[in-house]
Length: 300
Image (cartoon, rainbow, N blue to C red; front, side, top):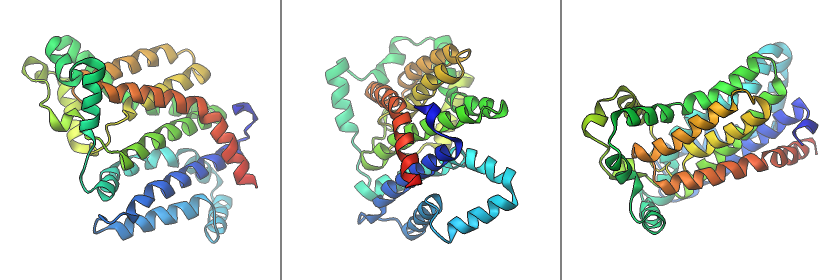
């Protein structure tokens, strides 16, 4: 089905997917616990929807800019989605607090942990295997998330495999948005906020320190369930078996290590990881149909 979607249609499908996410996530600002800056956020979401759907006068402005700077417009069209993701991630804590006024659903997930595993693996795994080498390896895999996300799209783009690049980016965005909506409307903090991290010799490793420093600097509270680290990398790895098979096995190993490392490091509940795995595979499988449907809607 991917092969039947032209480049312009694929770009239109991505724009509509982005617009749908902005509209649904922006609805959180209708809840009564709005932040002081809710008007600005609502404005940005609304303007984003209008631009992405190419409602006039934005359609004419974008068309004029494209005709004037076609190369720049082409690069922007292929990369804006990935470039904006950090900003969308940063607003998740604001949106879920608006909906739930600081309530999180960790109690539900911890109950599932007890029923499924008989305990709390996010607290117990590192204690059971307190090996510094193992810890460093698993924290390295956890950090490989960024390379897994951005490496394949960049490689495909530099190789001028634009159609494959579009397939990968659309699947990534569908996976991101699917997880982000959980973070807005069913926020879970995760064990990192509630349990003490692994300590002792494990805490002295450079990979350990880097992973924790990055999370302290940029983690968005309430974004634990399902694990987007796992779901997005699983979707990306599955796409790699379609478009970059030579490197796909390495991505599969890194994704598996990342999933274990997410629990070992106390970043995610094991339930987060399992549900992220299922959701990531489901969104990967559904991406071609969603892209085809949104592309047809854009042409109607």
